[in-house]
Amino acid sequence: MAAGLVLFAALQKVGAPGVIVPALAVGALILFRYPALTMSLLLVGAVLFEPVDPGLLPTFNSFYVVIQSSLTPIDVLLFLGLAGVLFRFVIEGRRPRLPEPLTGPLILLGLATLFGVITGYTSHAAVSNGDLYHRAMNDVYLILVPLLVVNVVRDRKALRLFVAVAAALAAVKGLSGAYAALSGGGSQLTEETISYLEPVPNLVMLTLILGTAAALVRRQPLPIWCTAGAALSFLALLLSYRRSFWIAAAFTLVLVVIIASRHRGRAVLVIGGVGLALTFVSVAAIGASGPTAKPLVKRAEQLSPAGIEAGRGDRYRIDERRNVIANIEDHPLTGIGLGVPWKVHTPLAESHDRRYVHFALLWFWVELGPLGAIAYLALMGAGLWTARSVWRRHPDPIVQIGAIAAFGAIVGVMIVELTAAFTGIEARFSLVLAAGFGWLAAAWRDLPPPPGRLDAGPR
Image (cartoon, rainbow, N blue to C red; front, side, top):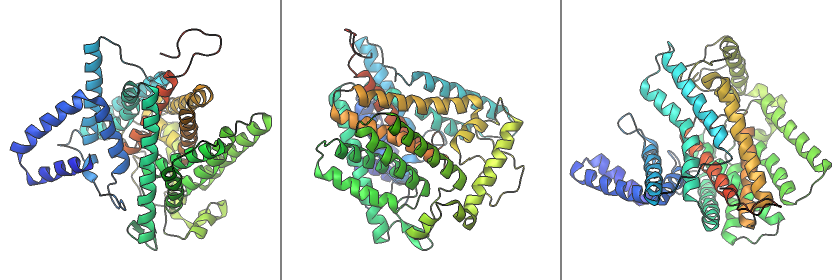
């Protein structure tokens, strides 16, 4: 796969339309005919390919580059996969599956995105059509990728294979990230070499760590490469110097261990609830998630509120939050529109792109209106509820562990996005997170009927 995409990029640079056009036509026909292959190319590519400093893996920024100011390769793969699924069902006379029980929140997100596009298009901010399209597509990925996954991953064997491939990809990212940081080949930030700047590898490595921890607690045998990959992923996550991912990992590891141990009762609920509340409050108060070039000990010291004065970036996040809340107060029912920069009401410690907000919930509200904020919370809540249903009722232990890891990853995303927003904003992150939602929906459809019912499980 990687070799084929690299070859395509090379042919593109050489400029040989007589070769490229027929090759693309044949490739598109194959991808249209086999949507499972298309989904694999889309998701594996989104996880493996880094735009810069990938460590052991080749850099392939062309995977995310806009084609003629309209489509990206990931757009093309997604549309081909969905078209192939629809064609297959038309030929077979069957109805496509919906990603239940996430359909409602996804519809809400779609309506909020449409509203944000209309508001942005009619604003006086001169948002270009191309920019508006690509910003909207980041939310569209969240809607369409689960639909693709749930119609491709259709049985228990496919569910287990999805988990195995995801674990293998995360292990590769852990190995590559640890190598990049320790060998000096990773991203350079003044004094330090880090593993990954991008959020996607940190998310997939965190998910592998959580899944491995759950498997160890439940005494589920794992291949040696999985355990080794989790150890390398832990090292690479540590060397990413992302404080919000550190905090998310610390809390979700405790959470996953509690869930996997099957302990119940008020004490466990109280401990988990208090821990979650303290985690959210500490991250929100610190307002820090970006990587810096400080050593691990100094970096850890900045997790305390006393360390906040040391970073202008941390102060900027607090200033940004004040300004964005003021913009929401100015436009509480509509937001300012997708792609529209928020206005500065109070001075900022630094100057950054004002079309971005580090607090995800505030970004969804200010860009898409209150319906966007509701859709974000509903989607995350539905994902957590689905994961809980799967780990409690699915008969396959590997699927249960995958659901526990997914639950922890969603909680981790919500913690991280108190100080660095990626969902619906960053294309790769939206794709990978949406794939996790799609897998949960596929696993939910494979659940046995609840006790007392004789009919089949969810359809």
